[in-house]
Image 1 (spheres, rainbow, N blue to C red):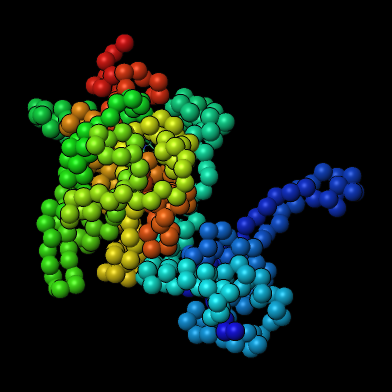
Image 2 (cartoon, rainbow, N blue to C red; image 1 turned 60 degrees about the vertical axis):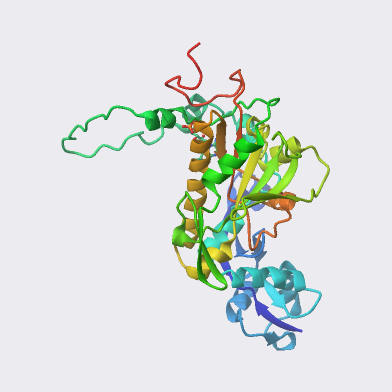
Length: 387
Ligand SMILES: Cc1cc2nc3c(=O)[nH]c(=O)nc-3n(C[C@H](O)[C@H](O)[C@H](O)COP(=O)(O)O)c2cc1C
């Protein structure tokens, strides 16, 4: 068996504070600090604790050149746990799963720090709504009480600010004013198929296909995209769209068409949405959810090992979400966006591998309900009439 280290690994010393038992036996109450080194790899979901010898070993092996296991310069008791954890990659069948994920990350041309950031910021099974409630951090007043005052809302520079004219509002300004994140969807009302189609057409549909070569196409869309690459795919969870069976879909931006995807489980769709949305039940009953999923290799094809590529990917998703808000608002529909998603669970829903593509945000659309059960940020009472 031949071994190499995985493509991207970095080490982090983590401090843990605990009770000092020696001091306790001597009748004193003292805290002790222990430092454990963790290896963070771009293809592994969890950080792995490593010893000094294991850290050294990983630092001494190449990520491209293979070494015979028999030639490894430390005892198997040191290197075998690294192999099982996936930090060492082997060329045999038994360890193919880690090797394939590692190769997937390597071939994705990630900038290493971005690869680690993406991988280790992922959630699985998190209930962010429950966490907020349990820690009494629901309202703005709760936040102020628990966290003290935030940095000021406006940064003021010394000098005299020259007033600018406030230009008379047009229809576009009135549209912008109506854009308010919806947390009170009408759970009984469907949207029309044409409404969903129009929303997709306005936001993620290709408005032109530019053929650069027989095998190289660029798409023009109504949203900007870093490098013009438009790497973000749209997956849908449809609950209430007339003429569309509730279920999972993928959107084809050139054909402007949806294909139904197999369901991985029989759980009710609202429960599936709630799990993807980390327990944010105020979003889970939107008529349709659009899961925004970049294909990393498309952006990294141009921006290889590039420090700004991941930033551009995130900004792309932000542009799409704003376009969805505006397109929906213009039609009298309501919308939301969230990045507080259970990435791993969302991948399982759509059978995504989490290496070549992985969700960044979920947006949802539907009709706003009649009652304000969950707070929305509408201080000018544009959406909700003053009570
Ligand atoms: C990147 C991003 C992530 C967001 N995530 C959440 C979220 O997890 N939960 C939520 O209720 N709202 C979320 N929002 C909505 C914001 O809370 C909302 O935009 C903000 O309160 C301002 O309100 P407005 O959009 O109505 O102007 C998110 C917005 C953005 C842009």
